[in-house]
Image (tube, rainbow, N blue to C red):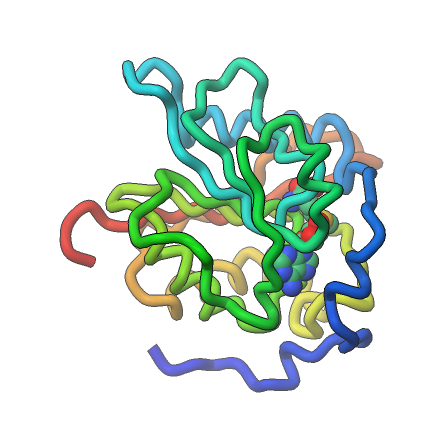
Length: 217
Ligand SMILES: C[S@@+](CC[C@H](N)C(=O)[O-])C[C@H]1O[C@@H](n2cnc3c(N)ncnc32)[C@H](O)[C@@H]1O
């Protein structure tokens, strides 16, 4: 598919090295408790327990000190990739982590078909080369594996790409779906509003979920 974006869609107010912005650990949550619960429920729906196996191997891209993985939900392995080692060392959900700047190098340091799932939680707005990263997500997913992009409406404005800052929540769902379509071969791209019953002052949570086809894709 032809790339419909212009390069100025992906400029940011703060174009300094991301490693500088994320040098100091931020041990804070970026969404409220009911939003975190909604994220956990999505993980539960996409990776149901009781398949008889050890649970999925999952990659938490743009990871910090919380992955919001439900305590009682089986997993074989949860690997974090982010910019701050201290944040990821404090993450009780992670089994391993790697520091890697996706805006410097969108190539993921993992083998082909090494994960059953990949999640990007409340961070997609910071990627300046999202389609390249999404192609890499496709590569590291096993056939049938799930890709979950979860977001709210909060952000570090100076580090978010312009097209995200200028869009409303519904447009952002379309934007993430477009990244997935442009990345090539994801199937079943589904847009979700995860907490329609939230209170007025609570954080909304949206997700776009897709899968790598089981057959040749
Ligand atoms: C708002 S926090 C979200 C953390 C976590 N996913 C969560 O759900 O709370 C944004 C995270 O994105 C990561 N990040 C930002 N820019 C990045 C980049 N260029 N490459 C890799 N990770 C990045 C940072 O390490 C930071 O912890």
